[in-house]
Amino acid sequence: MIKQSSFGNWLENKLKNVGMSQAELSREVKCSRSTINGLIKGGAQPGNKLCKAIARALRIPPEEVFIAAGLLPNRNMSQQDHINHLLSLLSNEDRQDIIDYINMKIDQKERKHGGEVHQSQQLE
Image (cartoon, rainbow, N blue to C red; front, side, top):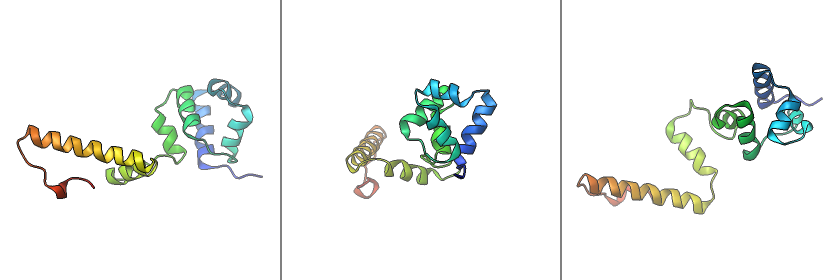
């Protein structure tokens, strides 16, 4: 017997709370009932696409599903840990794009306020 996962417990409770069956959820998210059953029983973990579809079907914020699935950190984490976690999900190229964007925003803010940005203040 497969041990039910914490995501499986979470999903089963959500379905009970909204009065939705596994079959109804599978129709809403356009996947097989066995996929939903696998999530609940702990034999499978959802990916990004399935988490988004589950959120739409349950009419809840996607972040709630991502956190339950372990794909996003819990909100009790510090903001810095959350940012680090999100960056870790990206490719090196995408991380560099984010760093470039942050540096651009810092430059804009400093120009607006007449200050200078010291090289040590910018991200590498």
